[in-house]
Image (cartoon, rainbow, N blue to C red):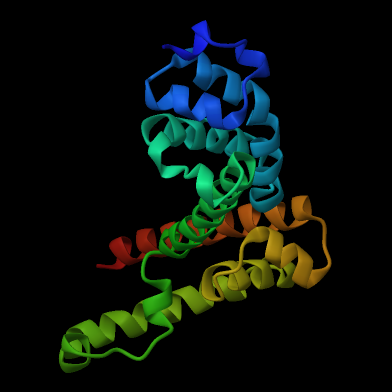
Length: 202
């Protein structure tokens, strides 16, 4: 018998609502969302420190729960404990993913800081290009104010999140975000101008 014919949704237990979800009961899903969306949001926000991203994460997490309700096993613990664990893990994964994306924004910056190996080390032209790129990156970084350079080096070379940088430097998160943003704008402008000069002289 459908869940709605047995009891009031608002008074249903989490386990009963999840049972309804397995039967594709939309009202059971809506009830769980209303019951725990704020809690999931606050959990994600503590990890991400970004309200807009945390809000998107809430939607994604509940969609996952809807698609795979069987992932929750009532015999292994409470639903809310499981849901918060899923939320924290997904938020941490997003932080790691954003870190990887940030490291790619400067192209091969990480590779530039490492010793070439394999084919690159055997290819004089590739080695020369890599050395030239490294020189350009270091030159660009040297043009930044010290506080912007430090923030960018921690983010792109050390792989720290902006929240971790703020904690490490004992600075407000908003200050670190501004430093990284302004620093990246200056780096892009510097590299663009360098490319333009290269074209003009070639």
